[in-house]
Image 1 (cartoon, rainbow, N blue to C red):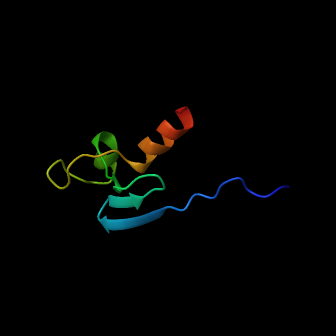
Image 2 (image 1 turned 45 degrees about the vertical axis):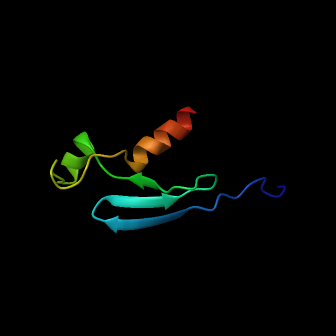
Image 3 (image 1 turned 60 degrees about the vertical axis):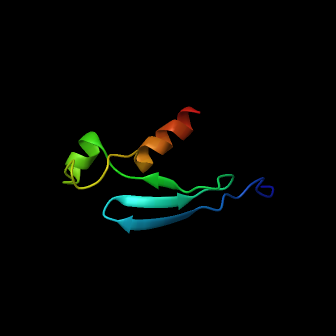
Length: 66
């Protein structure tokens, strides 16, 4: 097997509860992850607990589809 063509260097920090912040290559601003809808309900997060935001699962699905 040859050498990898690229190694992604990503930093993810859990801020509090379901909120996470990721620093991604090629972006100056961090990306935020949260919960919404059925996922928030599954984890017992109410609509007033955190502002709804895209989840890590949403980003994985978008990446796979891209």
